[in-house]
Length: 114
Image (tube, rainbow, N blue to C red):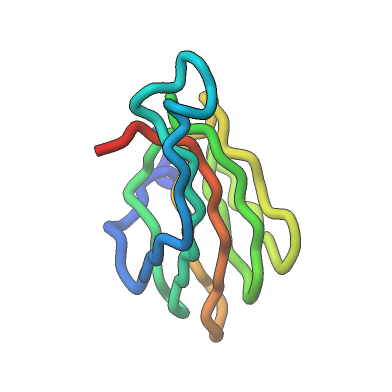
């Protein structure tokens, strides 16, 4: 793993669950899964780590405010307001806010229910 993929631990991140739907009653074969929508606020200098994958947890991110840097495959990509990135089974990454203002994203994904 490259040094680019050595993410620090999570800091300066607040996550708020906005909504969720139990998919079991909605779609055959989806028992034990839920569709969830969260708001993630990353403070300036904040990190959403460590490196994590999205195997069995697909999703998509929309940036509301600020800029979030997505680190994956040794490449750092900045995303500002608007559609961010997909998170599929091949996604292994970590996030940070290199800016001077808070960055806010809406994250929608399918997860196993706890």
